[in-house]
Length: 155
Image 1: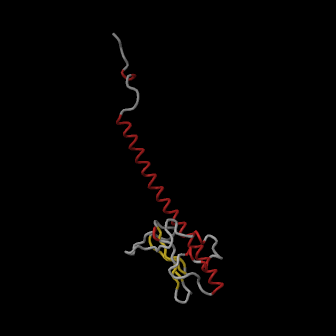
Image 2: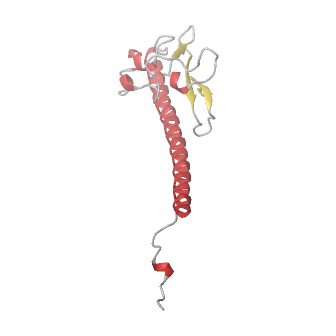
């Protein structure tokens, strides 16, 4: 009588085991992709706020010298030559994901980050300004959505 070892006949993983492992890997990669996209949105929001702080400093320097804020109403900050002496990165200062010369809101008034490009609005006497911008997920104490940066600070 010959005795055989049945366990040595079947080496490897079963189809069910392979499917379970592939499912777990797929779930983990999906969660990692979601976390990565959220981190990218936070990074873009932080870049927007940092850019606007630099613009605010440049606007204040221009005001201190000229007794009025620079730029033209409706003009994108990146096209405002009045700020060039105070802001070396001016030509490339656009929203991280926006095309040039776009406003922050769609026709319906909803905040759309892809449409925002730091458009300037000046008061009639050039003594006040506001720049509209949109945050995707929020940054610091600013929540997600449409905001203004004015001569008084972030709103």
